[in-house]
Length: 109
Image (cartoon, rainbow, N blue to C red; front, side, top):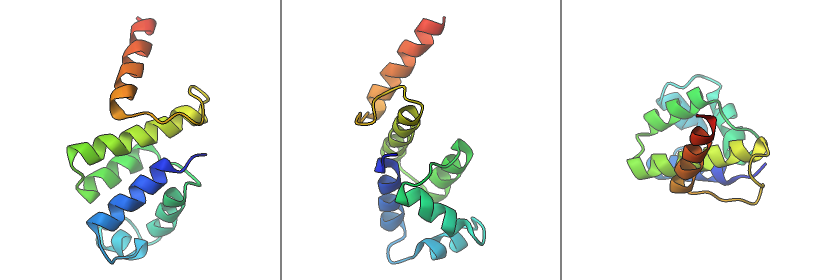
């Protein structure tokens, strides 16, 4: 699995919560006592969160529209790579993903 999503999430956490560890951020945001371990695995690229967890992180991190779009693009790119819908070396922007999903939706209609 790639690590673009995890890297982006880590960079956002470090930017929003300067000088705080994953554990400190998890505790401060009320994400649960052991959530830091889960978040560490996500940032390391060893797993992708559910969409529910992703939405929770986006909300508690207070991301801008651009940050949100970039993070979702990285997330869905990795999901599509895991499902072997796109090659593993593909890097898609938020706009590219919108176009892809529109094409898929039209084909289903």
